[in-house]
Image 1 (cartoon, one colour):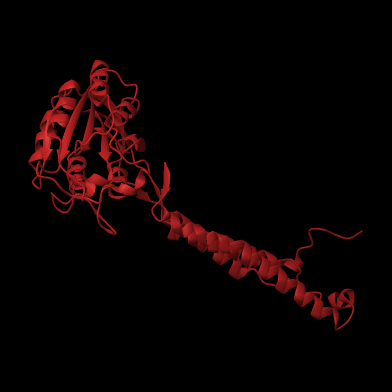
Image 2 (cartoon, one colour):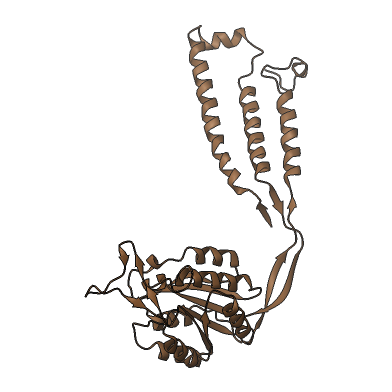
Length: 339
């Protein structure tokens, strides 16, 4: 398996056709100037030792050398031995509530950011598990298909905001239903749906959706964020107000969260500004059945630029010894005779 440590340098190869075109243009311009001095055929007879093709060969060799130097900068690497190992893990789909109520600041810095920090901590504790991300408000949308690429998961998590879903509301049922369709087809693996929300469900059937997920062998865990006292929802024009002009106050609906978790054969966990919620969730997830899978590992990659450097050096030496005029030494050997 071959890869490049710095593939961005390969874009420099786009300069090669530009250099070639400049060389051809310079050659054409030089020939036009020669025509001003006389007949090209006569001039050729007056300079019998001048080669028409060797300058092009030299330029061609130099272009190849430049290409090889670019490849060296990109650092070609080959993989060492390939090994496989068996690992055990679960599958988890994380459903993040991005409704406007998640901007309430009854937890620091607000419900959404607090939730993202908790989930980031959860992902950092995963080793052999697979994780997927989705967001929901009035509707639910996938963000990251289930994967064991935790770096990508952290990147997608960081980009989550309340502006990702235009339809406002808190449709927990849609989130759970979408999550049930997002797992792999693997058998005998624990599958967890983790819903992070303030519980202000504006749609029906969330409990029924959790129950149906449990019947399919999945477990629905609910992490409630916010406080029972609640808080206002900040906007660019001040706090959010209802149609009567009153400031909207949102609070955590723990009863709803508990009902969903119970129907989904999972656990309800309240999020605060500590790590206790994540620790408890990790403990609960470890209780799920872990499936064994084979993971392919490659040993440390070996640098291959040395071989490229040797080839480039040999071509430079060849280019150096190629003269633009015919070599009188080789003219002594008449390989072809005119008849």
